[in-house]
Image (cartoon, rainbow over all chains, first blue to last red; front, side, top):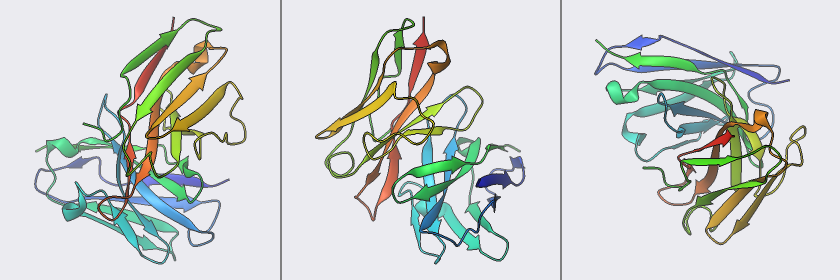
Length: 119
Length: 111
């Protein structure tokens, strides 16, 4: 059973960089044809896809966030990471990591982690 | 403003059949599969329907999906109290190098 767990600071100051890591257990991050995605959800609002990475390192990003987002993977640690730069209060949200398969995207999710942007 | 359009709310009584719509465009629903997710309060979303109308193992057959043109629908028959949740549609959008897009979500209330 694949499990995902987000980790990182719960509070980030405006204009700084938000950094989160997703640790995958129950299987190798580099096995199978999987992408690994980040998705966020502001309180009381809908889901917003941030971007994804393939184990080869290729990435796709949400066009609206592309200029501020970097997603990377560390196969030796079975982890992938998110960096979002120049954050504002509008970036306050629960951030989820999820597995993205070709046929059934987002079939496994982390529990989510709340990141608040505030001084 | 979400790329895919869903009604913000829907409701029904136990045993009823309800449908939730999802409207998109030629670059997303019109040319790619639609997926549906159920999010219970305080939890991560759960994949409910994949590839328009396929159910993952463990999802009751009360849930069904369909797609026509640039729109899709999720139907829930035999409504139960535990179906009260937020439902989201999603599709791959081929524009701008490709990206996933979600609907704004529909809050289903079981009366």
